[in-house]
Length: 410
Image (cartoon, rainbow, N blue to C red; front, top):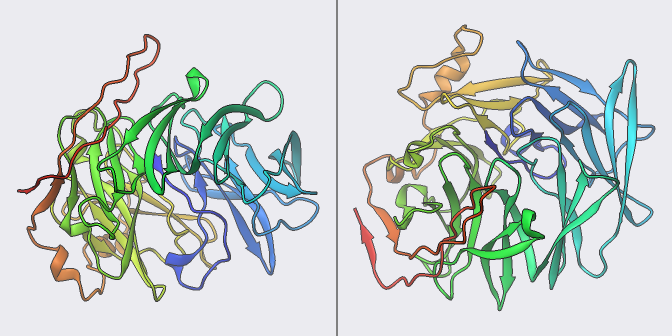
């Protein structure tokens, strides 16, 4: 299951703008900073049972707004705090009425303008990583699941951002690296001491970023200004494929920010059939969810559930989108959606009238008519560069530099 999470932030009244949570790669647990009055505290959600439920994990004092939390596959929650100028990491777990805490160690606060943040949950659920990124270099730290304390596992020259896992082993990490005034995605091989290779380089003068990846099918969701200089557009490609990267017109919504946050797993041979969940936001704070497949030339716009922990969710292999939400009446809930026109498969076998209604409703946008019809899909030609294969683990094939001399449409 491919998921994405946003960093902790103050909650908004609009459900689509609420602070998100982080979900394990297997979808069993989630963690977030919950709000009690004016105070923040860690909270773990269990998602793999008959009903989701939350376990509060408060410490001796409220958490700061910049604190990060991330669940592990064994149910413990990693917490990252800034303490006395150092980055401190601990594991939290419930102990009857209280909260147990296992300190893991600290990392010196990077100097200058560098910052350290947790990377998305590792696919195996046992390890956790953080990225310390400065203007000229970046460091990947393993902060949980190692031998003893935080361990430096990779040094990458250049300013880095992003962070997307490309395989199920948690070995290949995609980062967006800035060099020479341009941003290109690279792959960092944590099994080879942080070896760096090109991943996404469409044109010499374009900014090319990887936003999301599905290790099963190789589907990549990217953002690049290659087809429209000065305008970053959402597109898709496939690792190892000779097909071009494409920038569908249906994903081009004026005055809106469109961000993919979940991809349907398990579609081994049909990346174009993967369902993709999109978060659509406007400058005025309005927002909704878009449902889309690369094989289709339209986006289905659906309302977000009330209290949605915005930007967070996961697809099951059989095509059900699970969206965590929290309201006064339901403090820990999961809403489900499917692609419109497909038979719903609620996990408990019961109908979900509210969600079923949402799946058939277009969001109230003045631009809906531009994205509902059969529209041409822009393609960007590129060549493919093959890395040397490894005996113990398959390596993703980087997408290499390619000219934009000709744009073709279907």
